[in-house]
Image (cartoon, rainbow, N blue to C red; front, side, top):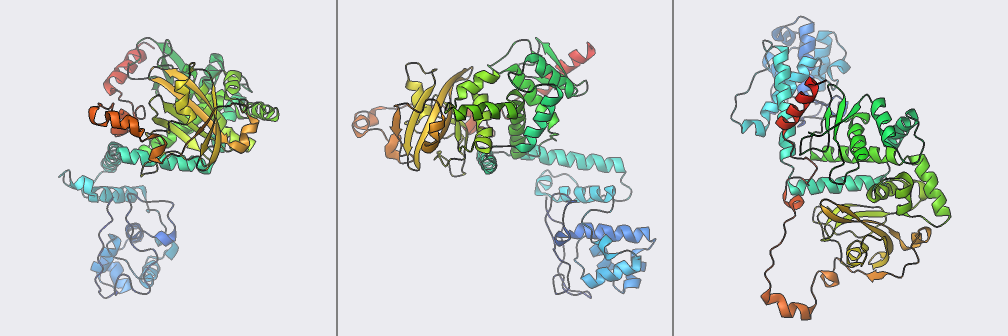
Amino acid sequence: MAATTRTTTPDDDGPARRAGALPGGPHSRGEVDPNASDDELDLAVLGRRIRHARQEAGLTLAELAVRVERAPSLLSQIENGKREPRLALVHAIARALDVPVADLMRSEPPSRRAALELALERAQADPGYAALGLPSVRATAKLPADALEALVGLHVELARSATIRSATPEEARRANAELRASMRGRNNYFAEIETAAAEISAAVGHRGGPLTDRGVSAVTEHLGFTIHRTDDLPRSTRSVTDLHHRRIYLPLTAQGGHDPRTIVLQTLGHFALNHADPRGYAEFLAQRVEANYFAAALLVPERAAVDFLAAAKKERALAIDDLRDAFAVSYETAAHRFTNLATEHLGLPVHFMRVGEDGVIYKAYENDDVTFPTDVTGAVEGQIVCRRWASRRVFANVDRYATHFQYTDMGRGTYWCTTHVERTDAGDFAIDVGVPFDHAKWFRGRETGERARSSCPDPACCRRPPAELAGRWKSHAWPSARAHSHLLAALPPGTFPGVDDTEVYEFLDRHASGS
């Protein structure tokens, strides 16, 4: 939002930013920040607090001007947030109104009404609103409170929708890169989500081992929801949640290779973690990661998983396959869960990738300094992984679905990887987990003789075709590239599914009327 306009010409109170002026100065904010410190004083809030105190004292602007020996026009500018007063004048106003100076300089608006008026003014000053060519509404005393609430609510939703729509591929990739850096900073371990999941597991009596459908139902009931399976779920959805009746609707049978338990737990995660409506793509992405983490922490409880992994490490027999089998989850879920716990509890740096058969990276995480390919924004998603890496070579195996072990010499050292291909409706994907050479000793499969050398991003490694081959075909080939929709769309696929609201509401109407 645009900042409130402020004048800086001198008058009988002197220049706005000379010695003795208030700390902080003007700010451009989209909304009032109730957590702002005094060093970040907002002039619009200060003006509202002075006006509120003056009206509480029963004084007109002219009467206050007489008491502080200033022009009414100057006080009007101050109350409207268009002029920054000197500290001496604020003290004089406080004495005249018989209020502490600290009360006038508090960072929050004096009332809910004042906060809404400020929000409306700033929203209407935004260039995005001006571009609509609509008239501005003055927040006068005659404007009803419910109308003011409605106007501000509309502006908030307009800004949120605009933010989501404007999430370009570049912005989406930046958000992914920033989130991955944040996850790296905490070793992909979310203590607060582990605690929340552990408390719910304890409440439903799940201590370890596979979480059964009955256990998922117990978690659902504990959080105040019920599960309903139906054959008419909207085609564009994996599940639909009726918040009014606290129901989660699922298809009669699993679709698209998704574990029904995971779908339910991910949905419940948003409520268990008190997620609010996201204010943009970056926040939506973070919430999605947190909900997925919550689901995995229930399917593979921390304490039981750490005990299992610690025992395997002691035997030098760590294996993602075994973690998968012990908790009856997918290989990808087991791999994700391993990265959550490996550094925090086992002292192992690790990296993870989900790679398509064409070499495109769909997901990635590392805290072991492996050199992922990146674009100029720092994003890994959508990049092509080196042909020499295990996540590419596994597809060339006679049995691509057998677990593949490999050492790869890279510029930063040698890494050992365990790679498994999972089949999905969207194709085959390699799930790859790796560690630096010194940590391979803890894993089963470390004896492998598979070894490769990668010098990527040097084009001579695997991007540039051999000279003899290129010489034969360079002038005689015209391929038609397959465009990756997740690279061209405003958002990656599945992040904001194209759900038909009418279809979903009609579905809920049918099922609500039958209850």
